[in-house]
Every structure is written in structure tokens, then in C-alpha cells.
Length: 121
Image (cartoon, rainbow, N blue to C red; front, side, top):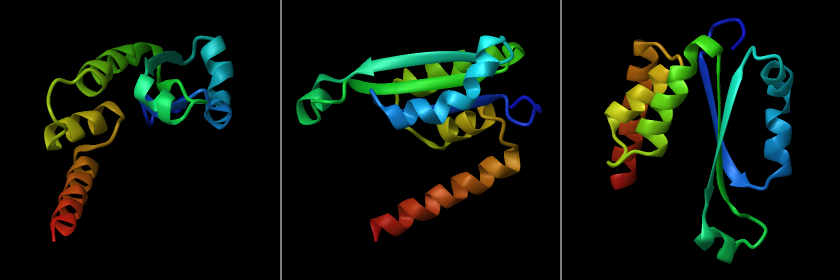
């Protein structure tokens, strides 16, 4: 990220989670100095809590370079707060926000389509 190759990183898991916190630890020094911005979004899930009493919900953690903070807002709006079913356009947008090039998004969407077709058989 600091090398400028990827402008946004997104992570999701249930919380609380020690291993998830440990996974994100390497970002902490850069967040502390302002080199990387972090946004944490906790989504409480009572149904999950009933099935798994030690879990409270889902946690999304987004990191971006300061000049790329807009990507976090767009990611939240179009991914986390979306009002439609997931589709190839949203997949492409997510890939672009994460810094993937068009050809990489094209390849990934093609692979997803192949997987969907295989699962329908």
C-alpha cells in the first residue's frame, strides 16, 4: 500500500476475533502516524449471537492512503450499504476501488461466471 500499488484494503470477519486483530496489527504503526487511514464498521448480528454466543457480529476494516480516502466512502456505499443484489458491475467497481486494473477485473469476472455456470449443473 505504501508503495502505491494498492490504494485500498478491505477485510471482514466476525467479531470479536483475536486472530483477526492480529492479522491487522501490521497496519497499526502506519495508522498511528497518519500514513494510512483506517475505518472500522461493526455490524451487530443478533441472529449470529444466538447461534454463536461468543460472536457479536461482522466487522469490516478498511484501509486507504490519505489521498484515497474517497475509496472507503464509495466502498461503503456500494458494497456494505448496497440496495441491490451483487452483480458483475459491483464486482468490477470493488476491484477498481481495490486498485485492480481493467484486465484483472475482466479475468476475475469471467472466472466468477464460469463458477456460477459450473454450480448450476
